[in-house]
Image 1 (cartoon, rainbow, N blue to C red):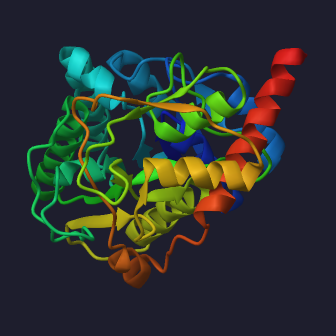
Image 2: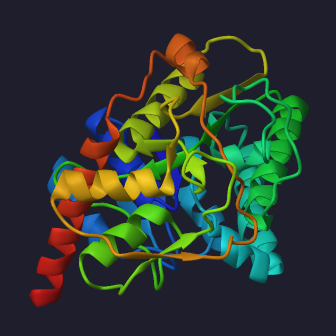
Length: 341
């Protein structure tokens, strides 16, 4: 029996693969390497002592996906295969709809034909849009997301809920907030291709001198310091939640349809400038920045109520913001050393 992890060499995927292996799951990765690097596979092996099975192809290639299911006894899937840059999604909407939804549908076709259940979907707090009240819990009404990226996540959830109801399957929709940090080993972390779309890798690269200045997208939001507020959760905490959600699905012995929905966050918000200051303090470095106009598709404020995950998954985020940002700097030092080799 194996767990299929799509996008398993990406940022969240690679950390989740590590936690799966640490919990004695057999892992099969499919990743087209469009937003990841193959050396991550070696580093997963170095961390865990076990090399996961790896297939490098695009999930839109149905014939290759079929071959994976023929070759392995898949009993569940954690799907991370998606484009995820908010700004880019506004510029390339058709690419995002095609990539994020067609790949999901192809996996579900295999699940339907082979009567497989236990599907975990990498969703996002963007499905709530700009919520009217904070913190956001699972009962907060969904709104049309501000970005195309967010819309693909909301559509993905709807597809999965229809799938579960129609075919009596078990699924878990994990709506997480803003993953940051790196593995404590410093061997895996967020690896943006080109200019980072997320805040913390941009901060990291600016501190390392790769970028001249950090662009802060807007300082006129209705927040304490005028910059946008998010809930930043350490990547290993987040990865452990996926294992807990998978275990819950697989241990459910009922014949009933299961649709689990969980928010994954710390329950605390931090502004862009608070993150910058925390990074400087944690790593004793300077991060020069400049204020720019607001970025299309961004919301003002979002942070989680994750009580349901604590109650039903026995999971809780444990890593403090500064500690998360220390691991980021360890990952950057590793990348610097790779460049020098």
